[in-house]
Length: 485
Ligand code: GLN
Image 1 (tube, helix red, strand yellow):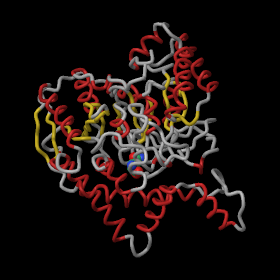
Image 2 (tube, rainbow, N blue to C red):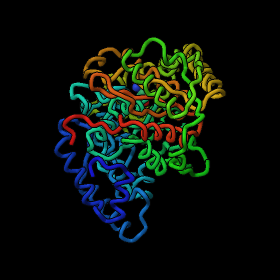
Image 3 (cartoon, protein in one colour):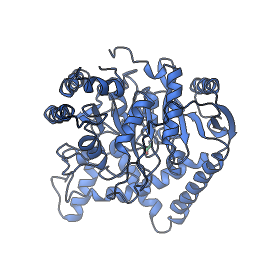
Image 4 (cartoon, rainbow, N blue to C red):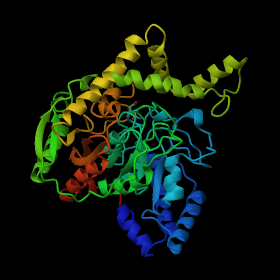
């Protein structure tokens, strides 16, 4: 049961081979035993979880269950969930208990009947690529405890890789689902911007943030996305489109699929052995009937600089709400209202978050706005146009997810620019608002490598199909870290 797919779990629950209470207990016990070493979850509430599992069992008994009712899942601690502590990895929210549910939580728990096992560790306010900026300490990669799991959804990735949960939610502003998925041998999907509601998801960079599933396979991701996606009038950027079944095309043959390889993703900057694994995956796709097309994303080298203007600009505005007044951390001692704001923010935010707020405030300031923010927005448009052009001659774009395998804890922590460059292949996809995935495609020195798939707008079902067929032909996604029985 610990290693079963969501479909297998669904069948076992429907056939009453196991109850949701039994299944949830199995995972809660694993969390109790293994989490102290990995630090993947920051909040667990056995009673809340078991209550939800009992309700799921009642639905199964009554015949009103959906396909995922009763299946346990770990939730990134960026989603507000009523009655749960929601920290966003920050001291600022270390004692914040949400009075309401994010739409993702409501859809997964109340509608689909999934059972939340707990909240996963993450980089503070989702700012990071290693999970080292968390107020709750770093997460250890189950493939090598001396290494990072990636970030910012590092706790979600490590939780699934160590099978503390069958699946998890993540969010991806600049790669935070895809990069940790790659580093922990998971399948992760960032949907088209606007497909999943951001209501109740603590905002980092609102024009980029998007939630998605992290799981062992494309099939699991498809089933999860079915529960997460959908129009929500409470998010003004949510898209009003007909509900889709994201699993509908999983088995479609790939004959004739045109795979675009951007020359910019295959040049310098990527570890040679990672690149070899990516190339081998592409050769496998050719065996499955795909054709290779050369494409170009000429402005992609500007994606990291543009992102590190736009994302901090939006963050500096979004994070102004954490002022110690209505919720969150308040400094114990202060002389005046201004002093209270300053001390609360100085004490409540960590170094990386402060760096982003400073950069964001600077690029938006009078006199610098045109030179930085406006310019970055223009670059963003050029990057999106590059993809529009590329998709005229191909159906999916492929390349590495991350330029290296999981790095050592502390290795990049002192050098922000090195850390930012971990997202060199993922960020352009967020700037363009496109859907992207990471799929396990091999190992280098015992550490997982991820293949990135990028689709055109709303091509989630196609991406999942392309990933699923590869996973039918290979077993990289089924490999497990040593010691994880
Ligand atoms: N690593 C990137 C950053 O720190 C992306 C984070 C994310 O996608 N949430 O901004």
